[in-house]
Image 1 (cartoon, rainbow, N blue to C red):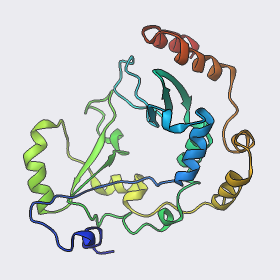
Image 2: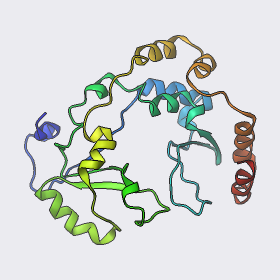
Image 3: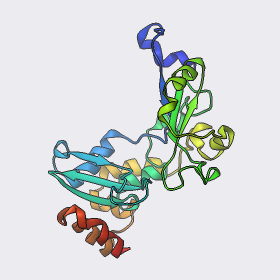
Amino acid sequence: MPSSSCLLFLGERPSNLYTLDLICHGVPSPLFFLKDLKHYCKHPERLSDVRFRWRNPMSNEGKSSFILSIEKQNMSRLYSSSYDPYFATFMKGESFRLSCYQCHYANLNRVGDITIGDCDSAKLYPNFHPNESKSSIIVNNSNGTYLWSMVKKNFFYTYLDLQYEAEINHQLSIPFKKPSSRSQIYSDAKKMSYWKFKSKYAAPTTIRQKVLAIVQTYIPFAYKWIIQRTLK
């Protein structure tokens, strides 16, 4: 797909326009997402915050983790990715929209001036901010080079082995392969109750998870991290 296709709505490319694209894992159905949120709140529009890569502010490490954070009326609850069916099937690549499995943009011929996303090859750079999550910034053309020259002083960075990153961060190489379970998941999502669907596609909630949910909801924030560490 030509790089200009994402700019067709403008008719032409303005000289002062800079574009950025994402290393995208995939996108499930919005209706699937809404159904999942309704489990946590009958009226999802009343939720004040939903995060899928929650970073614990009480931790000494700057790494994000695969935790779902749901916040409503200043009360937050946390769930592991494996306990939420939307999150669990997303992590396995089983619930993407059909277009994601044949995405024209999942390759190194990027359409944006700059590409950003998770850095999956971070282990190659063990001495570079070892206790923090790392992102990739890929400069794709002269516009990207100019833009990066203007902002790089605001970043801590090291140079990336792009070919190796593309080998393990697969959406930089090829679209995610459509799994055989995908059609059945959406069929079940339409027909099953939430709890029946969850029992089939997510891990059963343990007593520890229930206790952590209570801690996150009712215990003052200053004490939450201590209790969480005790329960590990």
